[in-house]
Length: 140
Image (tube, rainbow, N blue to C red):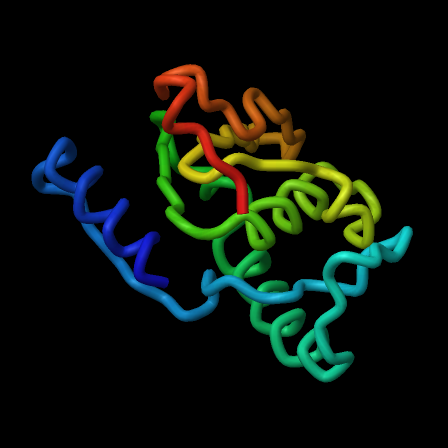
């Protein structure tokens, strides 16, 4: 999680006074076996069970409606890796989570999910890198 920690350090300088929490739940991993299968990435089957349970726990822990008593909008920033983001986006949109590897994200990109009080979810941005100079855009 070295890159995620470095990115968090940079972003935190611009958000003074905001709470910063680290969790292994958002660590990179293999969330679920992709469908359709891919030939370029094949982790051991046990990795899907270990990582998948952890990443699903992250989704269940962090992606939810605000409390009904909340009166103002709230925002949370998650700094993590592409596999986790792609899986969470699929789950939040109620798409088949096995399709997570069909989404492509650049390193350092921004994804913006909105969860409305009634539970409806909207994906405002997926993998935006428009703020980066083209020569800095990379993909793993």
